[in-house]
Every structure is written in structure tokens, then in C-alpha cells.
Image 1: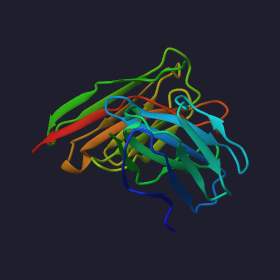
Image 2: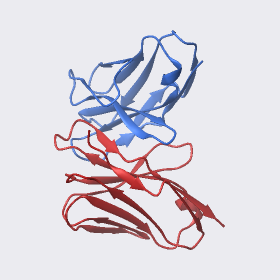
Image 3: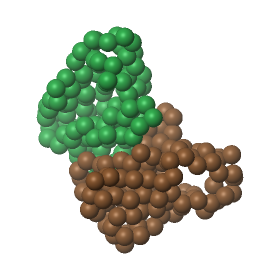
Length: 111
Length: 112
């Protein structure tokens, strides 16, 4: 089992460009999450999906959109990237109220 | 909004010394999870505590949940270089499916 996979691993964008971060899990988990990690800030929840077909905002949703394509896949889209979105992005999956499994992360730089 | 405060932010120890990180909340926590993140890596789950006063051990790691469920600690005995990384506490909120609220983490730096 691959667990949680994310693509790409690294990305550099110019301000105003758009991109989609991909995430997939093979553990048959219902819940999936997107977090961002900034130095000194810990991890902050951007969006989550409790089950296929549902998505909800987390702590820092502004500037992002998500799609729960099916039970396996949960994508994060930046429509118009800004330097403030420079961060490391982690996708995670879990069963409700149990441990979360994190992907390897996408390191995004917006210039 | 709810906050989970974690101290210290950084801890330097000599290899073989003990290490403790603390997690505090102004409100009652429904549960607490602990994660470890190696430099350049992703968070990896260590343990979950749910019951008041709960104590769990994993080899050299001891996890505690306070009696009032407002604080938690992780203690590592006789640190090794493999313990280097950032340790996070996090709360899974009552609803359960709506993600974790993380503390800002404690960076453990070990000097050989």
C-alpha cells in the first residue's frame, strides 16, 4: 500500500498563476484533509472532506478551492496564487477521530 | 477559536538527557493526539489519549493526559539522535471528521 500520495513534490509559481495539488489515498478512508505548514505556525487546516461528495472549510480557506473527486482523491486548487501562499502543503486521510495519515507534502513557492 | 498551546518552542539537549514537551488548553480537550515530524518529512502519528489521567508508554516515550483534560505531556527518556524532530500535539474536535487543531510544535535538537 502506498498510503497517501501527493503530486507534485515541488512547485514554483508566479503571482497570479493557478495550479492544482493532487492527493490520493489507498486506505479506504472516508475523511480527507488539506493542511498548510508555515515556519513557527504548526499545521493549519485549509479544507476537509468528511466523506465522498462533501467538503467544508477549515481554519484558513481563503484563496483555495477543493474537489473530492471520489473516495480516493482530494485535490486542492489555487486559482490565483499569491506570495502569502508560499508554504508546505500536506494532505491527510483518516477514519473519524482516529489517527491521520499524512502524505509527503508539496513545497510551493510563489514569487 | 480554540487553541492548543505547546511549550517549549525549541529544546536543546545532550544525547542521553531526558526531554519533555507540554501541551495546554484553556478549554477541556476531547482527546489529544501526538505526532512526530522529522526534518524535511511529514507528521507521523504517535499516540492518541482520550481518558482523564491516561498514561501510555511506548518504549522510551511516556504520554500523559491531565486529570482535567486541559493539558498533556510527552516525555522522552535518554534521548537518542533518532529522536530529533518536531513533536506536535493536536486535538481532534468533538465532531471528529473536521480535522485536527495543532499546537505549534516543539523542535527537539540533540547534541551528540
